[in-house]
Amino acid sequence: MDPLLKHREISFSALHPDPDQAQSAMLLLDDLDGVEGIHLLHSQRLQISYRLDRITLDMIEEALRELGFHLDNSLMAKLKRALVSYSEETQRTNLGCDQGNSQCTRKVFIRHYSSQNHGCRDERPHHWRIYR
Image (cartoon, rainbow, N blue to C red; front, top):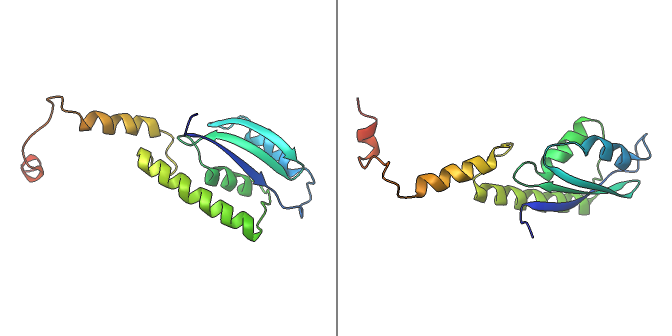
């Protein structure tokens, strides 16, 4: 099981001119970078699978809000959203990803390479290396 592949549900508000918001959102998100799959659960709910190293649920929901979709803003939905946001950002930070950075894996490999003992290090203290 891949820990970077996330499966989440997105719920929409019923008070919107488009009665099938989930279907409309599914068509828009289908070709988004990092999205692995989308399944329609209900006219106001969809399930999305995405790669955490490329995109987060916050990014997806922000894009939907900018396009005019109304997400479910009940207390339970807000609590779930906050918990998912915190856990995903913590996991991305532990992987070495910046928020909004799609080159996460590159930074992980750079950090791994710089931590290895490979003989390409300058052993002088930092203040000596920048002295001119």
